Figure: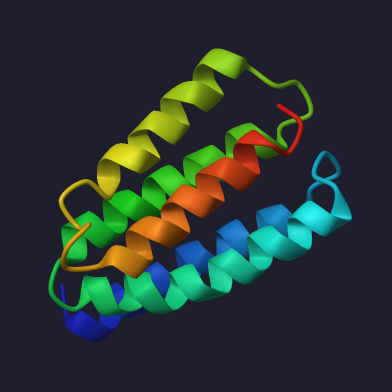
Length: 118
């Protein structure tokens, strides 16, 4: 896969997550605003990470997408939500030193999703 194809796929996934948050009827507007702000910062960090660690960036986005899906479902399943958050947290393990901002964003994103009413 060419680098610009990978970057395009990453942007498309981020766009999908953003749209899911915007369309959610289960997340309070104030939480949506904060989550969308975190997502904007995550977009920058994941795009940067993907240049050197494409597969890891894809994993982070996959778990971000899954966690967002579970948090915005009308019929919530706590077990599935917990698994998706655990996966998201695990996806950034090992990046604490090289990408501390990314890890911080993911931690904040997980906390916000967890507090959004599930």
